[in-house]
Image (cartoon, rainbow, N blue to C red; front, side, top):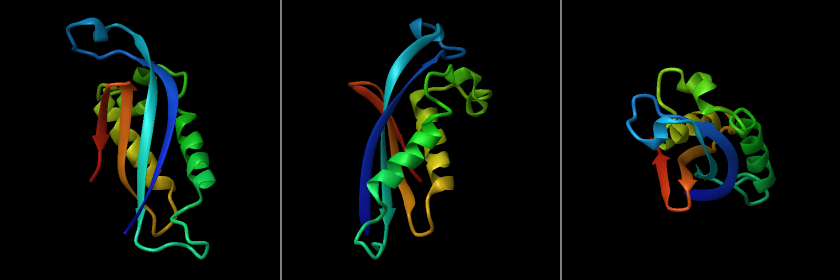
Length: 121
């Protein structure tokens, strides 16, 4: 099994409904994203997937998140836009866009340098 790791980021705001504290107020983060992809085989060039293709997929997905209020996104109409739920939403989006034979192993989202959450199946 091979793993490919790509990191990127986006900026967005959110507020946590039902939370009692500062995070119930609208506030923003510079979110760091780490995506781990896996494949059992390499392509004819010896790659899981070209890094530029992964970055392009990430850019396409993050276009919907970047400089937005996450509470306004469909993903978070019911669920709070917590770091945990953001990682799950990104996992789902990456899973839809990868070529056959490549899968998402894990998505980790960092809302600060020291606080993050991962989603994997």
